[in-house]
Image 1 (spheres, rainbow, N blue to C red):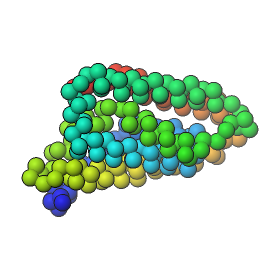
Image 2 (tube, one colour):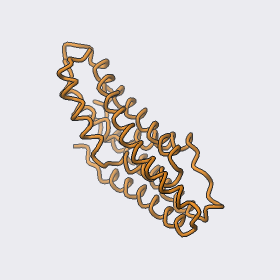
Image 3 (cartoon, helix red, strand yellow):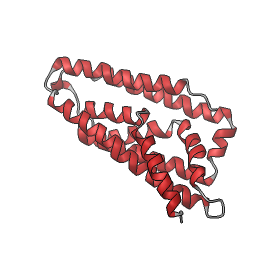
Image 4 (tube, rainbow, N blue to C red):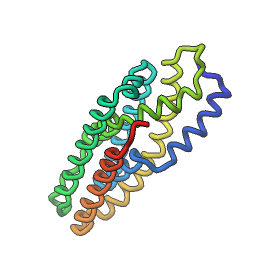
Length: 205
């Protein structure tokens, strides 16, 4: 399906991208602090699934619509901004003593990771710009996109998961402190608000 030499060149490039701190890594960090390792891994899985979704859309050619229609790009982008701001407000409200703090369920963390990544149209534009450099036009494009996307998603799953698990371990050790819970609420809200601001300032080109 993919030339072994091409795959050999793609893997280190994808790993370098996975290791670069970005929105997905920060989201897993925040989920780990708030909900522990299980929530972090669930959010990480949601992000990985969303990346495969972006890759599938790009391979089917739907990403071209996002690239060509400014209103569609902006609609998805502002939906993502609104969702991240909603998460920021929820994090502030959750900054209560540990006894009153509801656990972040893995299922909820998974959904949030999925939605946050899917509502970032910059991801599909990145896929359209990056993956074709490693594809062969003479072969089925969708199959190549899916294979390369699986490598990219797997790398992100490992790297972001490790960050989230580490943050989750720290968060659980300090979970009994009311001061830490208040601080955690502000930190989580700042992460989500920062991601929202970053997405709001994104330009299509």
